[in-house]
Image 1 (cartoon, rainbow, N blue to C red):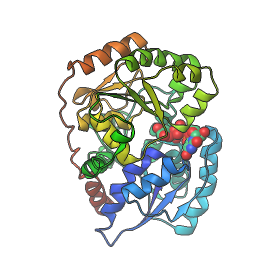
Image 2: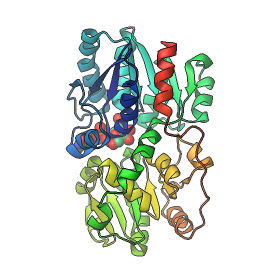
Image 3: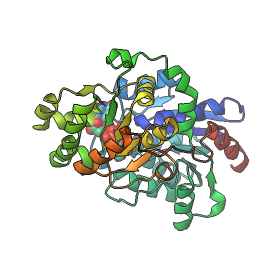
Length: 363
Ligand code: UD1
């Protein structure tokens, strides 16, 4: 079985890594890894391949950045001849980025079976580009692998038949569990001068939070208070840095001595940083899940989550972007008023193995 596997953006890399490893036990599978090039910086891409031992992609489509329409269209144009040349039996997609839907559309129109890993997640917020990518990708996929029960329920509600849906756990958590010990060897805490100190971690990159200086400014109102209490480490996404540098907010940030910007961190450094943080503030999807396993309080700076299991069982709370609410939640988190989490079902490090076995049985 020839399987083309698609990666494009940073959150895809930790999801594909354990799947590529699992294929190695099954000689009947010929995996081909294709990188769309949606993310291309060393710190957004290559570093993850090295640290996670992901094999070199057979091809990099080199599409880079652009508006949603341009990026999606460029990926489709570049991927179509690849599918025609390689003639795969299956195209496997992970996550919800533009590369996911773009390659999915190409494959399904060429009659290739489509598999979606991390299917069924829904925020209910159609202004999020990822929500559109999720809905469309699921609707054209032949096999759908879910990380949590809400994903299964959402797909059933959308009329997808039960035989195509599998609850398998979470490949991103496979990667976290595999690398947790190795991450402890990272010297990022001493590099940042944090040894033994309480500190918070902040990540922000959603267009709704960073594209509008007023929205970004409201979050900074809360951060201003928090950084007076403990250092806030802010590994900054390239889009966020660009937005900051093109607005008056950059002056405000420079005037906060406790807010410390760093370049985007590699996987192991970031895992170590999160594991030792007192609290994490984020608008990322994956970080809500990783903090649940690490048992670190997570404040999600959005009005919704597509990963409700992290709020039901885990350490995540959706606090929105009102500065007063953020500060209240921060105080509860650092004063021990946070629930002890439970591990979501099947987040056990074996999701990739389950997926590969099901692929062999079903396709
Ligand atoms: C993408 C995903 C998002 C995911 C995020 C993780 C979509 C719609 N969004 O958002 O779901 O959470 O990746 O990072 O697919 N840039 C660089 N270097 C890079 C990559 C990006 O400088 O290697 C800059 C460019 O200015 C680019 C901007 O970041 O225009 C945004 O990149 P893009 O790939 O469009 O989306 P992300 O915001 O990274």
